[in-house]
Image (tube, rainbow, N blue to C red; front, top):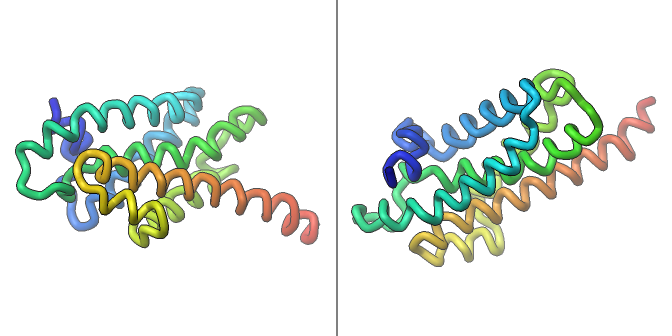
Length: 168
């Protein structure tokens, strides 16, 4: 069970860039959930992924020589869904029905920003990553997800508040 959760059913074994694959899978599942009317599954699923990660990763790490093995991607999955929650909730509250095509920046921006912050590891993201153990595995991606979510909202505000009125 620890393996299934920590690797997100084996997605962590996809190469190259297992974290990017896990993030992409998280985006596809989040957009699919939104499209079928289950938008709130994204923030709820994020919470469940965080909980599952904190429960499964310690058992997985006990069996591993590496303290942050690349196949452990529940952290990327949870962080990506955290980032997406920042755009999914406002879209849902405003009654936007089509996230895939009509509101595509709402999933592209969180994906790109999350990958940027997860790879770059600025400030507290890097500090969390250096903690090691389960906390280090999980928290760096949650910080990256938080930064990506806030960045996505800032970009949406900039577009809708400045660029779009100027163009229109």
